[in-house]
Every structure is written in C-alpha cells, then in structure tokens.
Picture (spheres, rainbow, N blue to C red):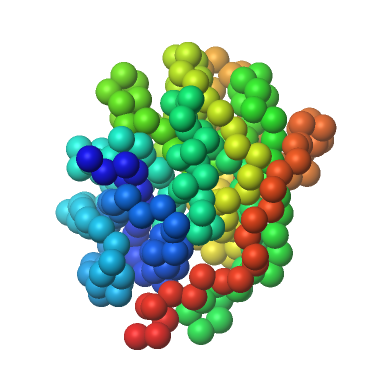
Length: 270
C-alpha cells in the first residue's frame, strides 16, 4: 500500500504545477503517489512527462466543476493511507513529507505553519519578493473566528473521509476551514507542527489566487458560518489576517526552513 496520496486540482496553470512537481521530486520521503485532477483545463501530459520518476495519475474532468468537486473526484483513486492536499501553486520543502509523517504517529490530522510568499515571474519561474510567516496557536475557539489552518501540506488519515464524507462543495472558497472544523468537532486528534514547511503563493499585485476575490467569497462564508454556528465573520485573506489585531497576540514561534531559493522546473526549459 502506498503511504501518502497527494491530491492537487489544477486548471490551466502549467508553470506553477510544474514547480510543484519539481518540489515533489526533491522529497526525501519517496513512498507517495500524486493525483492531479485537471478540472477541464488544457491537457498537462507534457508537464507530467518531464517528471518520469514520480508516480502521477492525471484525472481529466470533462466539465469544469471548480476545485472542491475536483478534490472529491480524486478520492476514489486514493491508494495511500494518508492524504496530503497541495494546491497547484503552492510548494513544500524537501523534507516536509517525512517531517509531517513522523509528527502524525499519534494524530489523525497534522498541519504546519506556512510561509506566504509574494513573487514576480521571470523566465517561467516564480521569484520570491517577500515572505511572511503564518503561524498561530492551535485553539478551537480561535479557529472558529479565523481560519488559521492552511490545508496545503497538511496530512490526514484517508479513513477520515469514510467517517466524515467528502469535502463539502457548498463551502467552495472555505472548504478547508469547513474540513478542519468537521475533523475537530468530530473529536479526532489534530496536531499543529511549529515548522513552516509549506510555501503558500500569494501575488498581492494581481495573480489568480482565489483569496484575492473577497466579494465573491462572501456567500460561501455565510454558508460556512450557518453550518457551524460561527456568527458573522468578515472576509479576510491570509495577507489581511497577518495584521488582524484580534489574533496578533496568538502568533507563535515557528521554524523557518525554506532557503528562499525558487523551484525552477523542467517545464521552463522546454
């Protein structure tokens, strides 16, 4: 049996998913598969072919159904005991999988701190221009007010889906917040690792990151609040949360492990 299944939805982002594959090709832990769900975008066979050493399965969806449906489409194909979701524009450091698996021995879900990085793109590679640590206490009441969980690079047992079901497509932009609340509220063991092994991409000057689109996110935040009884919640992307007065005092120390070097992929050399 495979140990870890990486689930990544994608839609017309060949350059960034190539960088993710580059990051995955550098992992010190190697017993993993990669399930890429192409959400009716352009084919990515040429990108995948550049990384023959990786076990990659591409699931091509016939109709664009948005990323939550795409994530759920991967679940029947999972062979791993553990699932690691990673967005197609995010990255992980080379020892991230091994670290998270070691930390997960007495847990059902583990997640780490992250570095949010702003960037410019040059010659097909994203170059970091600024870095921001996103690290907060693991506390249920805090989590009910602010989404301090970044799903990319987290690790959880596959059988959580057997008990809790798939991701909720009604949550759309807040599927990850909904997921961690469901796991915590069901009494599963959740652990936070004080280490920023995930690199979360956010281009503040443009870019197509979904958390840039706050007006469109409002209806889904209201649905999340109603589902979990959270009350009124303001829309806040991760950059804005960094300066949120109510949670500044809840920041925690974390290990910074990224050397700051870009993940230049083989795709840019084509």
